[in-house]
Length: 459
Length: 163
Image 1 (cartoon, chains in turn yellow, brown):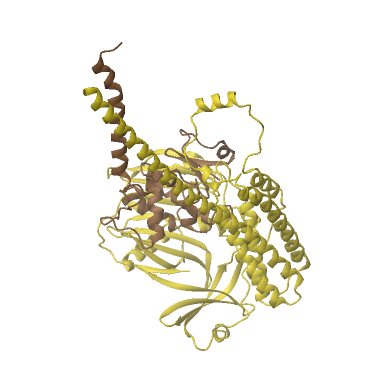
Image 2 (cartoon, chains in turn blue, green):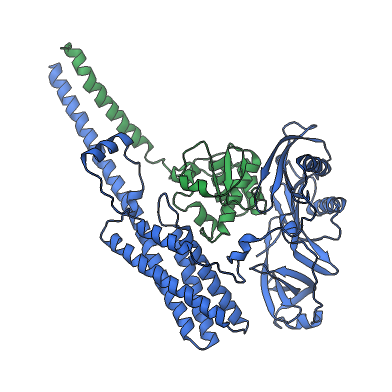
């Protein structure tokens, strides 16, 4: 009797387990198909955009009208950017096609740079034509490689969903390896790996755009002086943070950092307030205070943005930064972050920026970032403006209200700087900044001012 | 030969294990990454992307010192500006296998966003304790050997930062 009952119970349990297993398997297949669809979509998008970009670049070279060239370059810019986006979302485990990604980004960026140049009424130089032609050739080679991979994808030897999930544990794999002789089979991603290796050997591409190779090697211009010792760096760090917090700090730990600005990075402990720490970076060259971050949470505000600005301004003065101009401000949590730019005469130098963060509960300086300042500050020979402020004002579309004009040196993508008139304009209750080149009268760029809680940002 | 009672014990135990596994699975199936807990108590930033960045920081560096949290946020933003990576914050965060916490779903389970939100705001405001890092990893864990070919800039807390 018991035996019969237990047999029934066990059979039921087994049926249940089998049912559960099948149900799990069905679920897994549904998810695998969704993942496969995602991978296929990204792959075919990549292939299409690469082909389209190559065609657009070809049309640019074939066209003889600068306007048509600008149109096709704009297409190539977007298509190459979309191809880069699809590539980066493809699941390729254990390997990143970084060189392919860089090639697509740079081609997109280069097309954009040329399109902008044509839009300004300039023409492509023979070298730029040559550069575009060789990028197009490379794009064609990439398309051919992807077509080969497409064969694998269509023949199902490459399944994107197969890259997900847990690997077989090593013991059964070894046994399986013994039982079946292993052949040196090509891996499913070999095509991508080979293409990426070839693209690594491309010559570097220098032009006036944000992805130009020369920007990788940018060095700080404003640090001055020789190397400082660690002891000297610690002394400077403590002086600075004592002044920022009006307190007394001691060094807890010092490490070094070898980023764009090599630094001694210190963690300081407040001797008066328990659990308050500050992180501060002192440049090895010149011993400048590049960055400070106080990690304490800030309580309910007692100061407003104007009072915070005065605190920040006074602190800058005390640190020897005179004549800095506050430009934007933004409130995050209970902190006010104010961006200051240096001035030379009556010209605002936007590249040379220092950010100061003020805690709104007690007015303490809780943050400092002078990275942009030390990266770009140097003695400049600013040209004399050829336009008067009135002439710059006259360049603005007559339907738009002008609120103010001042001289400003602005950074452009690619690292150059232009002397401009910054014209603040208002259209439909939204403020804009139009930058009119002070030498040529060309409009260099337009920024929109966006109101955010506790401040304004420019985009 | 075992007595009959004991002979039955093993299959019954097996069946009970299977049954409880099935029940456990059934109970948990609706909870996996599905529901994203809202942060009613913590005020998080001004933009949606900042919330996403704070989540990633919490999941990747929740136990790290504050500057380590800012550094992880800065790595994401350095990637956005790099030609090697996608050009949006969400594109960078959800790139396949880019972040362990996205692969294992921990990014959806974090609850303490107070410090990570402040770190995300600092990173978005331009603070970068690494001065240009594009990668970070925990040297105590198993990582792709390829990653060690990058040039290391510094170590903050348990994370190594590299370019």
